[in-house]
Image (cartoon, rainbow, N blue to C red):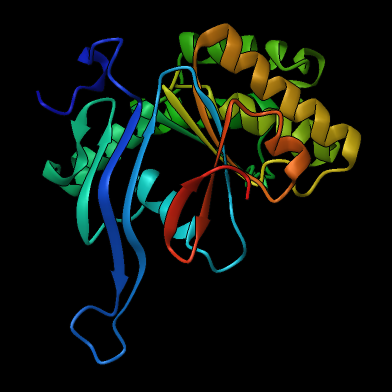
Length: 239
């Protein structure tokens, strides 16, 4: 099937945007275009910062890349798959398989343990828990330094620990791309550094690509590359 990202050659970029545009209120007097012909490529294994002022179009761009919204012009490829050719069900499958998300506010399920939260993406994909799913979640929690906390309710964990659970959850389906939206913005400096170091370790060890939205120039400087959105236009450099 055309949507099978796993079949893409290793040299295929994880992400490619060609002339991507996004407008709101189409056909209305108040129609407005917020992204103006974005061209962007993210290579496999690349760790890239996405920066820009509030209102610049960063969130809109991230929603498009995360397949949570569709562009009004241009083409967007995930692991070589032209997402414009997919229906909503196929987009959902591609997103679940190829993209992991880490948010500023971790969005963990308070009633669940750390292990159960990490299992959630696989559970949504497969419909019921199994031993392999549990083993994968336990392995990831061990990797992020939370093996002893795996059966604890997530609300009993510190903010930094909760964000580590969120990183583990993002890795549950072995995605090629992690989208991290201000992943350290709600943490103290030490916890932020620890979470950032964890993401870099995953990037280097597994070759997982990261696109990290951050307002922190200190973190942006530690990425392989920085791109900046200003008034709906993308450019290289922290600016």
